[in-house]
Length: 133
Image (cartoon, rainbow, N blue to C red):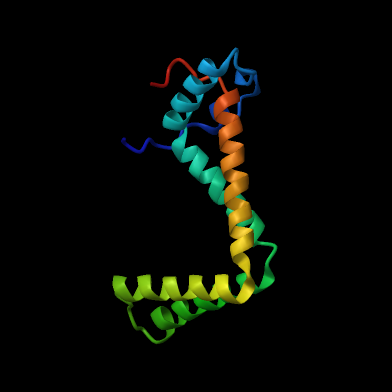
């Protein structure tokens, strides 16, 4: 399956296209079609939910802020360029530290669940527009 581009938010959030499906078959058809059409929008909404819930954990923000500051110091102050493997490794280490030290895994799961729940309800309730294939 090919990843589709971000669809216009005005169409995605249009209230006139929301209604209860007539039956299970219609709901299944809408779910499949809307997931295909709006998959990038749903990913953005889910990421938004994750960021929103992680904003409430100050320790997670502090560790992420420290890692961003360290990256800035390495690149701009020390003039040391990290290669892709070092960036990946440091990202994994910082992510592991954030999850371990802050118990942010529960918040991460909560954000993912919120995004998936919103995406599921929206894809079932939203009538797919005719001009999108």
